[in-house]
Length: 249
Length: 100
Image (cartoon, rainbow over all chains, first blue to last red; front, side, top):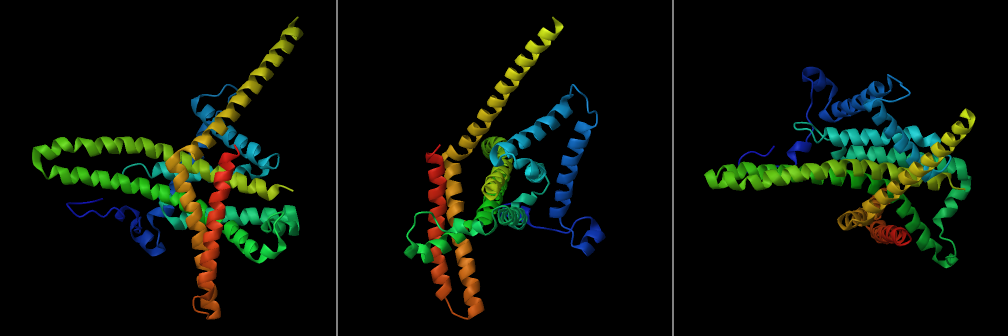
């Protein structure tokens, strides 16, 4: 966090070894620790929710069922009947990112989705999957998509590389979107929080004005709660859209 | 009598399910629209689409130059093509919103 008059808003994204000597030896930073926590939270939620397996669900079970049905509907509505096969993947992706975004909003915690290495790895996973599915379903016809229909053959040397670049830019844009949103949100938190500390140095007048940045931070928290679920949703729905293109004949 | 009431219950249940199913679908499309139609969100999305294609183009050009020892020829070509691909991405994004 920022201290005194020097503000270092990017310090919160730095990785440090955790868990003492063992973490030091394994180069185990906060990022994998919080990933494991996110996975545990999601698993606990689903396990605790579904353990009663009651016909008339309780609150937690109803929540778990709503989550299941929401992603299931999204997968089947977007991809089509083949969506059922990809449902577990999309469910995992959505809740892993959502849990990561939300755990990152807790004070003193770390947001692993604010690292492009993590988001790019997730996006590459989606990209490689879509390419494999495309090649399996469409075979060599997959490569025909790189030539726009009705275009003059003379333009092919120009159009095909552009289409290929556009296709290759998908995982990059997917990862940059999630990463940029999370970084921007957390940097804004830090900036407004440091304003409070700076204003506290100006005596009573500063104390009065410091209410402003605190109010803004409260509003930002509401915005970040929205952004967290929205970005997880966008990641999942774009995965669905790419998979729909992959399974289309 | 009881069979009859069962039938009518099933029919009503079906109707209710269909209604709730429809409502869910409407919610989903509304959400999608909300994601894409908020102006700052759209601007950010268009920006990332454009930037990411340029990044991919520059990266490929850079690597090809490094590999083939042709200083900056492929970098120039692929940076231009990456820019073109970025415009194509933005055009597709805007077209998909207009088409809705």
